[in-house]
Image (tube, rainbow, N blue to C red):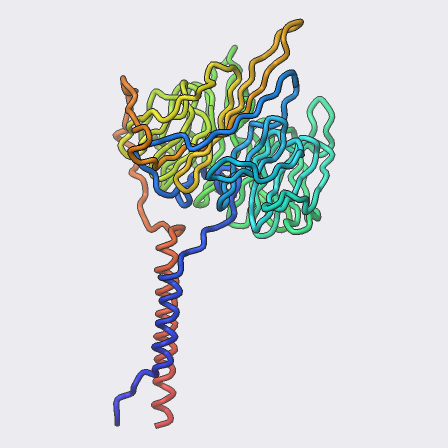
Length: 479
């Protein structure tokens, strides 16, 4: 019996498949939204690109308004997709700017106030203070569809599996309208389902594993089925006496929902905050972390560490157990993570903390930091940190009218020696490491493009082996 020769056609097929997997660049995901993803992780590492130890101002765009007592935009988080930055202007217009230059590509006057845009499949979705949810063509800004809620929509949309999830005040009015969670068809804007949530909240829904999570007022958290809107569970986390104007939105990852609450009234009870970890499937509470102070930012999560900022401390917690890993005497707003660095807004400007070595570096001092009422948001992509800062100088009764300013900065984080080197803050803040903290879990990053290529390649190889075995067996049966 002669040795069986593996058909050349299979060699060609397998070789071609391997070339497709390894030589063709991976196409990056185009779904970008508030705090990077539908789970609100705040971890931009997959799209951060190369970052170095030098920084320079690539461009900035400033918009001013004088005398408008009810400003619109400037309180949203930018979103970067391909070569375009989607952000809001001082009058609430949605802007599309070229990421390399800041030059305007298009703008749409739709009165966006607090809703950060979401971009997927070439469409931008955003809520408006005028009560509408808009879908705009990402390339031109032309309206694709509009859905009216009859009340302000100041929350950020999340888009998953062709459905837009967004919360808004359905009826408006006073003193406190009920909040409604909407599920809209992403292609047409048609209402799929909606549910009413007791009370009012400006927090944004997050999504994971086919479920949607949203918080109401007084510490109430709700879980609904993604497709039907059926309620799975609702629980109360925290005392609900929230003194922060923008309570943190829920964050979900690896089967755990994280939500913060500001507790105590500051008079009879000491102001304190709590971070609650909840089983996303059952609603059962896993752990609670409580400290004095008030939450200053939505938490961020990377690997197995949860980063929490209060008005006087910055904490790193083991995301599974809630055990404190370290803390430092810093306070910051708008935390995001990228490539092992934690970016936040400190007292004098934008700071970056090396979360591996726990060393703080000074990055950028805003030229307008003497203005009052500042609010800062961050996003990062392709080695560039985009910072949107809204500031205002309040007027006085019978005096001058208030002045509002909205500036978008693009900071090159890989500027080479032409930039300014990151300088450690002196004196460095004390950082306390917990001796009992559980070590962060390690493992394979399934979101990595290289990991995905390897998995696909192994699957193809296994399939090829199975086919080859079947061919050999069939050949032997006929001999």
